[in-house]
Length: 490
Image (cartoon, rainbow, N blue to C red; front, top):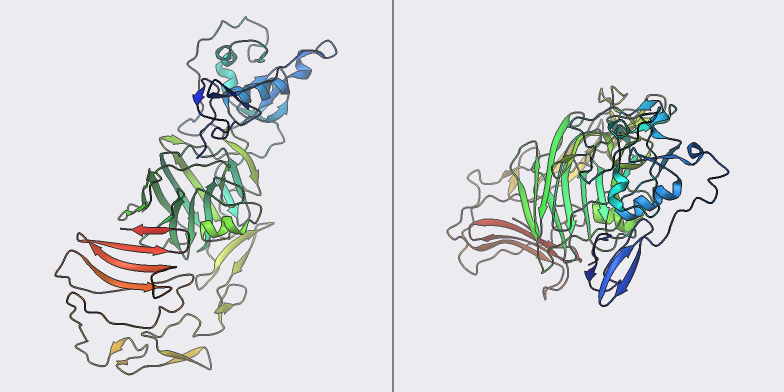
């Protein structure tokens, strides 16, 4: 796995193991490597322009003597900083609202006194041969990041299926804690994704909504871990999600419900991320990325109170942490807030305060109010055959041993209870329709702390995909392999 870039000191290793960003280059000497910003900013054209003509306002809220000096500061500190506007930040009129609690970072480095000038709010960084710590001479007035008057500042972002925010990569090498609140208008959607590569290969971490459930996934290189919430989200209301990972162990909690936990098998403990963090959607339509996440639809709804570790992340755009925002708008009483779509359909906000309903396979109509096939939802139990009837009705043809309108009752009202001992087993055909999703419910009483409840494999010799439900030391374990490594949910 790659190490993070370090400008401050050299480390043992080779340049193959060290990643440098923002213009820095890796240099190797005597068995040690270091990221170096091997370029300088000159003042060749300063005679032709006034200092104000060179000055630019960075996306970190600070003013720089030139675009080159901004890039040099970004390189030396390994921070993504871009030009937000021409001229000093203090001369731009519209300020971003301050987010509670403030996420503005202030330096504790030694500073030199700033000479008094008529324009007390002006700050221009001169980055030539100056020591790096002297580059942080930022007065309080410059800490309030400002944007051009034409900017449309978005506080709480609304995502509409292909909207997304782009931030710097997560610092999640050994641990990660994410907390946020979401109000979703659809049963499927990408909340966030951060990968090692743009192609989707390698390590990754994702948070998504799939079939109405929250899924927290990560892969350290030895198999994906999938943690799924115990209950579905309610469309149109805010839910609080907490997802944590420490080395191989993961945890997911929604609205304070019982935690879902799991851990990655294999020797790898660390998450190696190289790409930017995407919130709401991942651009590029890379199928491997969507396969990693488990859904390809973007998020429809609002996100607020976003927190990484102990720090709240301001999702306003323009903002100090948001590098790019695409098609987001302000979250308010939009056309989908009244939940006009029926029968579990997803509501998608469109232009001019409009909306459209994304219906499931068994419904149609503007609001998904027309049922097409009453058997599409598989209402019959125990493998019974569903027969479609006129006027959206259906009938269940029950197999031997079951009865009831949905074949939900056993032929013998007392039911059949099998007693297993040691090597006893019952064999059934392979689980149907398990390629994409599976729901299994078992009622049991155990006399032992260890045992196998269920197993279904791809091949008789144990090679290939499989899933298993076991008891280990009194705890239930759901184990499966989709071809990229074994995952275990306990």
